[in-house]
Image (cartoon, rainbow, N blue to C red; front, side, top):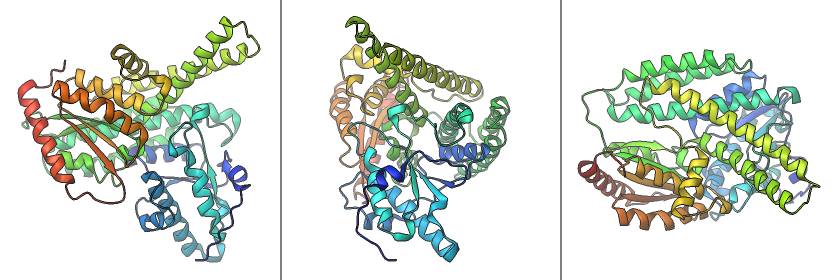
Length: 451
């Protein structure tokens, strides 16, 4: 297919941003499979045609249109969207119209290269004349991932609430799978059951999401927990408990991290991975924290010009955070009586952990805030090993490693860095096997008692 190399800088403003999703198919890249499929189901509940892109089938395309210096998730998502568009062009022929799609690619502000994905991918898409009409829906952490502009304004709040619930449900399904699979009665049984349960939950979200009928969805979730619990063999003794953190895409995208959780399970682990909703909470908390700081400075300096704006932000983001933490706690409470799942850490508590131990500061931002504090909490809670998953050269995760690794060496908790790019490291399984031996020794020596 022909390409053109002319860069149209107007595309960055005209074809990247917020667009109505009512008349276009919303294409959602797969990051964590459970959450993305439930999010797509929730969008469909509000009348938005949404589908999750097939992932990793277009890696050759992604690598062909990147230099290798980009963050690895950029290559994966680049390949996913190009693969889909080429498949659609082949399927529809002369009826294909790239303007009929919106590529849902949120962004982050700050130093992370993720904030530039949509700009770079816009340039690549524009180099294909038949794909140049595709718009990139770029929600941003700059406003706490507000959904304003993608649907009628009077429905934005409901869409935002139900979308967050869908993400938490995806986190719970992931944690149910990781809790059950190491103790399954038959190899492969947990995966088969959870796959069926995902379709069951997606149907519930699509049916009840728009009306915010969460109790109907939660009743189905309880039925799922009961079904999946039956997969466990109670005779299998507890295994080393491994806490996983890192860059949000790599730690949740199974193919990009070469199925690292399953690899650790193969060598005797039970794994708990940091959640996606934790990042959404962190985004709201950062805005709430910033508004509180700005309000305090305005008052001290008697600069009342923007006082009202700061106060509005304080209540807006504070309200978002309160709702998110309330719903998250509600969902975990409903399932915790049925199955002992690890709960998420409250973001404000994670900041307290960093402040108490003088390890890092939320003023510096990035996922390092969550990863460093999250690992310290894993240690307190009695985890037997820690894993940091990230793209090769990822700055926040390298910062995390530089701070946490020496601490873990000092207190004797096994620690493993697992950076990833498109290659497969020859000694990867050996490193994981060695790490799991250390974690098993830690379990035998200390159990799961923590500090």
